[in-house]
Length: 115
Length: 112
Image 1 (cartoon, each protein chain N blue to C red):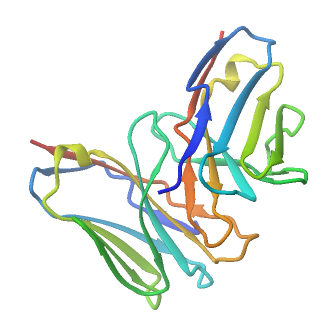
Image 2: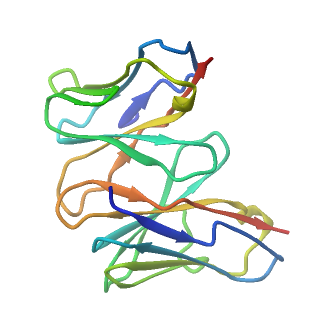
């Protein structure tokens, strides 16, 4: 299957700092990427849909100024958690959809811990 | 009613058993159906991908889709301890603008 690379896998930061997470599709072009948040023993919660060359679409209740998404190329999307606070601590996962079809391929996730 | 429903488990079976995982859905527009496996603190891995109704087999895994009943299943034969994970069903109507909707996941433990 297609490979999606997500970095970093783990980050610990102080409250008030910003953290950037990268999501790359390595062997296919992804016009659409998705960002999710997942709490322990819970399912994926879609945060936003990222389309190459256009503004991201955020789900209800997700602060777009808090979670900045950039999808500058067909293989790269980034999520920046601005002024992170302890309540932002979570597991963040990206996925990329192949151009033809509906298959989603996921990154390995980023565990964010804000102290 | 949620768009996709899935028994969260946990489901515990002995090694070698046949496992049946199921999802029901309410949106008749869904045409693409997927099953993902997620290990703890990892991203989900695509296991099976099917279009419309019917069966699909891949090794020990069989996916079934019954669109008339709005019901999909994943069967795991000869289950192994390494199959212990959370299994997520997912589905989409199929246009480039459609979101993929996930079930809440079923936690499976295969006991040696």
